[in-house]
Length: 339
Image (cartoon, rainbow, N blue to C red; front, side):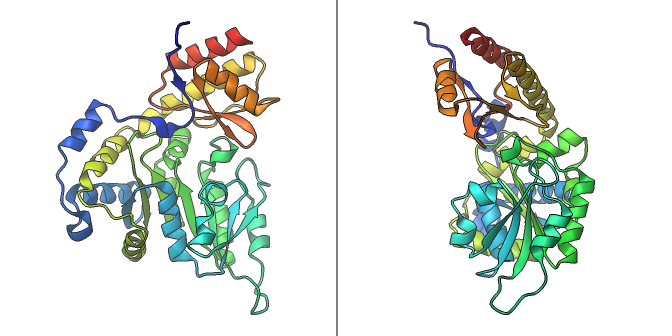
């Protein structure tokens, strides 16, 4: 029996650096970033800060570490923070915000749409000052795009109202923008248009942009100075980091390519719908499909050489730069042949 070539839709993290990215990494100017601040790392941090409309940025090995650093700086042990239900910081980071930063999570129901809480929900959860033994709510953590709801996008006007509600109730705001680049491309806006009013933001380089490793956490100059200390505490300092930063710089040149991933996701969703799958039209590069039996479906897909994963009780397909429009068509052909 002929082995089918694998088609990997598990995540946009499975992308591999192409030859141009590998050449940039091999030729990067480097120094010890912990001691001297690697020059290529500095260039990447300055460029990301400019794209996000903030004062400074810091490279970190992962998005989870970037979120943890930000929340460690923002929270005192026992502080409560708010995040929309299903947020990555609540469900997919091993509880490190509680475990290490000492924060008490409070999920907000997504009453304003997929992955989005309303400003009223923020105000109600923040609440008024209680007795001295009550929890202090000090932070709102947003996510754009919202992974668990299928890469849903928060519009700038919705974002502004949420930030305003946070300010009214004395909350700081952290934005988990792991796929903020996707949101910006979907809306046809610069990334900085989606960070207005936040105190800190995290963005990933290792998802749709195709870098092999790395994220950025950004905010004020004072925040980044403290974030650098927390990164070192967590073991996230690197030495000749320019080798990794060079990949991020190449990725930033390819932000507009994410539009093709979004188009491929729409094609995949439409094709699955025509095959009888329960699928909503994706806003970005994540397709969620409801099925009667998740485990059976994922096993069946693997036998077809189509690799997907579970998310929110559904099958999650993620399009990315290493799956082409032809690969999407082939995936649909295989799924259709097995129906």
